[in-house]
Length: 464
Length: 91
Ligand SMILES: Cc1cc2nc3c(=O)[nH]c(=O)nc-3n(C[C@H](O)[C@H](O)[C@H](O)COP(=O)(O)OP(=O)(O)OC[C@H]3O[C@@H](n4cnc5c(N)ncnc54)[C@H](O)[C@@H]3O)c2cc1C
Ligand code: FES
Image 1 (cartoon, rainbow over the protein chains, first blue to last red):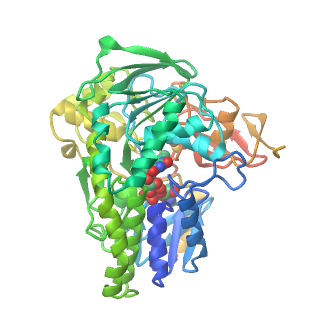
Image 2 (cartoon, each protein chain N blue to C red):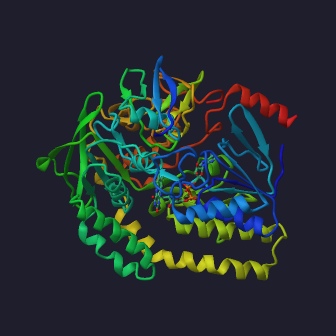
């Protein structure tokens, strides 16, 4: 058992921000991340020996260096937190061994993952998230394929498309579900955040130069292939994103990167017993938080995309404010100093709000997205469950995560419902004509990560 | 010239540069089918960040290791798995 002042789970901008502020105020801090290096998604660093990687993001490198230089922060990479028990008590495992932490304050900053709705053929090799393709090219210099199509919604698609183009990967097209004129409103909402607008325009310019078309109001209806995908079928969408199948078109492609925004990773907060609330615009279920990002559980804070998707700058600001709030709470910072030190981060957060809201409105998931699902389309990838099985269980009244799990095994696989539930809960809402918030979140049961018997045994030793 | 490392994939020796994940090394070989489901369907890299478990492989004797977040090392023994990944005791 180890008892630092603060334990931070997640070394992305949110977690690094929290650790830096807590340590600056004189608190002892342990920062754990399951990746080999700190950085999180946006600032992901290549593996140490990588020779073909793109150069890492300068601000990410700056944060990493600050964390490494801070004597108050013990960094533990390659370590997974796999549950939060009362206390809070947090078991953290790396190969074969487990340490249980009992910090005075816990910061949960695990980030988000991508939302992918089921469609026929989505389990074929070659279909992946834009994030997966980005990691291949950015950190390893490996091509995901020769003819790549990106589809979904949001600014992440042109961002990844232009990274692929710059790495020399053949990108055939980008399919964006929402209409082009919605995007024209962004400069109006983003005038206080010109750097974000400039970044977006840069991506579009790269794609234009490479003659990669962006097709608006288009969505995937099917992927075909054998050992690897070979064709993508797409169709025009209406205002609710329902495809017009009579105008279906097919393109040859060996890779499809598909992502419709992000889902916060709330399983750790859930296992800590934090109350959740439904915020559609932030990716679904998120922990309920106060103005300083404390959750409903005493001493437990949640920050960054893992507490509501809002992007890297918001993530760091939230982390910084939570770190300062913890320092004040533990008596390491005077209230007056807290107010002064948190102000610049608060200002930054406020400045980001208009463009964030505008993007949320443009990219909000519409119900027609699920209309290309067929009876035999797999809904739960882990358990290979077709939609017809899930639908008939819903017809028999299994309309919550637990009841569907018992009736069909949905969500029983190793991903624990992370990929099937965000889509299935929306499909239930559509079928039963209720709001998604009434369907409820999935539930999480530790271990949230694979843990060997050896790990559990070593944890008992520790606890004794 | 880049120094190369080698590892075993289902009994065959594969060479690749250092600094790759196991999934990255497989992609570099053009080998996309990372795992087989219970019904023998091929599955490959999907989320790429350790969430979906589609890339579960047996690595150095440990079952259901996520190939997308595991760095490849000299002499590693990697075998493809059939059926879903297993989270271990308690799952
Ligand atoms: C695949 C992907 C790629 C992205 N790329 C970009 C991009 O290029 N540009 C952009 O603007 N935005 C990008 N985003 C959006 C991005 O998530 C945010 O902008 C930003 O990274 C959020 O910061 P964060 O600190 O909240 O979370 P993250 O940066 O995601 O960091 C969370 C960290 O927590 C760790 N973690 C999670 N669970 C555990 C656990 N149980 N135990 C230990 N460690 C854990 C993870 O390994 C990760 O390092 C991407 C998102 C994803 C999912
Ligand atoms: S590809 Fe999703 S866990 Fe590895």
